[in-house]
Length: 310
Ligand SMILES: [Zn+2]
Image (cartoon, rainbow, N blue to C red; front, side):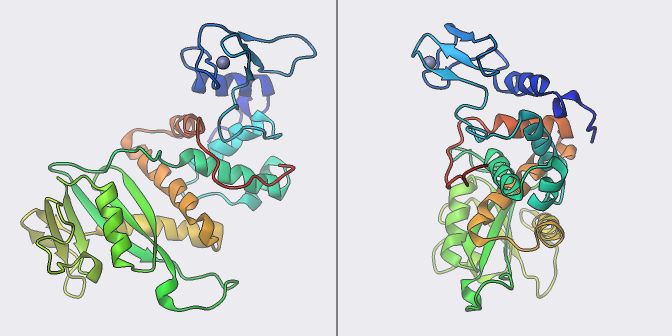
């Protein structure tokens, strides 16, 4: 990773970098959509990067209406933060970010979660797979942190990852190995013409219905008590891609994040999914991955309270 790029040290260059990513065809007003009658305000008393819109008489900057809105952290540090999270395969802790950027731990925590929010898929994201595509579905449970109260195993949080072979992954938080939640995740996020490969866990078994997932085109399971790979009607049946993905996530969890607050699990999954979906093997390098994350900052609704003084 090249940290000598001036966008990490020169605030004007950092601003130009964010503006070029957000507005490749010129600025437009995030309040009303006006693209013609917008003017950059200049002069000593004006804060840098401010635009005026003649359409709605509103004002905006490159951070308006995105995850960086109302942050007091310089854009040079945001640029570095985005780069670190986009390029670190096992994640990057808020403690490290706090030390590296010279900002408070609270600000670093805030920045890290905003960056994850930018990396999260849109609600409207298309389902994975399609005709001729194989989706592996597999679920894992997370053991609760030592700090949290002991409770029944069935209440542990976990997640199901839906992995298109050679393609994208989407991970969804579930309660333990809750069958209904696993099925709902598959029905919502997998294209019905896909072929589904799973292990023999009860959640994936035929349940008296003509098909366990109602309308999914094909489903084959491999019984892990017997073997991990078998030749089936739909090709080689296995869930090794999904298991490989879990191991990246678990290394990150153990090495970088220690334990994850349950309420934040969806954002950590979004972070790991994002890097996987924009991986080098799919032709996305660190710079391009960072730009995609920054692009995702736009228009994200903030779903949790912002810690003040960040
Ligand atoms: Zn406007």
